[in-house]
Length: 246
Picture 1 (cartoon, rainbow, N blue to C red):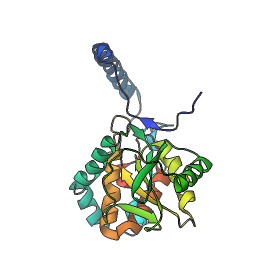
Picture 2: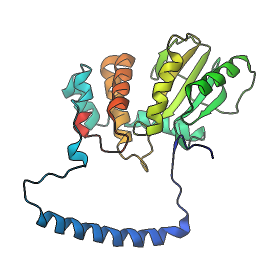
Picture 3: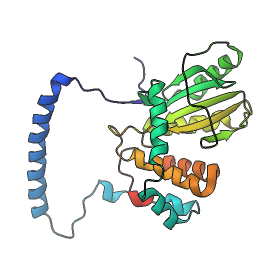
């Protein structure tokens, strides 16, 4: 059986919608009633155990990497980079991205292969080696890499891997580490990070993508990569990263 190594956009059959809605309403009523009874039965100073309140909160990423937190918060709350994140998503949709991570191998600026999901290091290296010697081209139109992109590695590398990623995706978190290993000391390869948050699975991912752009605004690509690396390091990949930790 093939291992699931990417988060995919869930597709719900239309004929099940009415049943789901009715079930959701009933379930919501039960949950609310239970919550009220539980609240009334608990002492006011009782803390829930095993939940989000038990997780040790980290200092804000922005503060940790030396950003001006006031400017950062203004940028994030003002939605300054909403359109930039959305532009990455729109480009990913045109390329047929329906799950994350989704990566494309470019040779001399042309898409020659695709990396599906969070492939292991040796598999990625194998695909890169094949791309270096292959003349295959995929019929895909990707927006050109520009100064607004986030690139790490040799900018003049023959091979560039463009990844569309979701900051709350556990598979993206794993693949992020793999990609750092790929480019470490390899002048033939560069890595471009683009956003593809999937709100159906990870409601906080879009805002987190905006946060990385606010870091980029203050400190360029150095700050972008520091911020992104740290976010992937601390995120529980389950949608409960505190907003103030950004």
